Length: 117
Image (cartoon, rainbow, N blue to C red; front, side, top):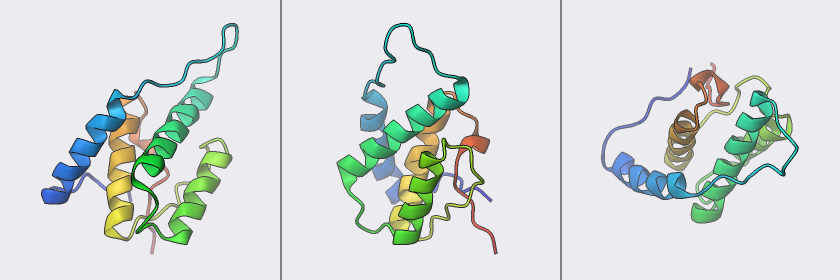
């Protein structure tokens, strides 16, 4: 199950933070080198994640959430979705990264966020 964007006051704050993230220019690939679309998506997602953590820190993000998220990126963003956002801060970060990924042309099935019983 993926998490849809939450509505309310927190979403407004997240939208403002997202606007800042979206204005950041993505890093460029060196001339003569190209990435597969899977590699490019992972690169863009990894950058978005690093940007968000650099801007807002990891306060309120649990160790399990951070570890699973790091494992997803380290694995080339191809592993099973098993990052479950539980705290308000984790949900906020997942929402920001979801919108950023969709705006970068990635499908929602790319994302690592899912909670299972």
